[in-house]
Length: 245
Image (cartoon, rainbow, N blue to C red):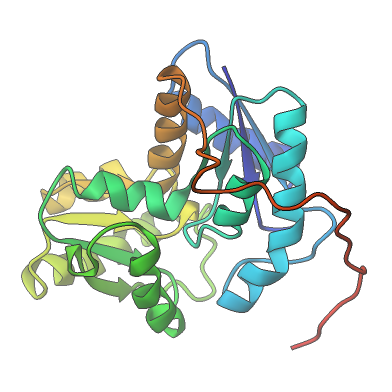
């Protein structure tokens, strides 16, 4: 089984992407090959709804290429699930987003869940995102942000964990959640540490997405074209330009 993971953040190194695949491979079957690619044509780091739109065309293009290259499923490596519906229209293999996958997992573990995100400016965006997950919005009863400005999450792991634990305690003690979702895939590998300290399930969105993609392939399931109809044939193109904000 081969799963293509599309990371919408521009300019990642091969070593950075391979490291993520190595971590994720610990949670997949021995017959699963994980391959990660990032955007190279679109200089975007997904930090807003604006960035989600900008990243979309290349994500769809890479998803189509993955199906043509024989991959069995695609994972969109971002909690915002950029271009998820468009990708499902474009291919028949399963396409799984980190946000929707982790939210669906949460409903099997508790009645109310909370999400920890990296930037309070995106709070309203994430509140609206609840409606895209397929869940009743009140299942995701609380969203809080952690203060990670100017922190390299991959280099400052201990500080990142402490920030997550502090915000997680507020979700539990003040908001009454029973499950926490780490709402950024940069938190890969931290969920178990946070869960042990907090005493409730903490979901790693990257692991949830890859595990769900693997499960769909093993069940021989595919994207329903009755729901995600293939777009009319014809060339689509966009000019290579830039926007300075």
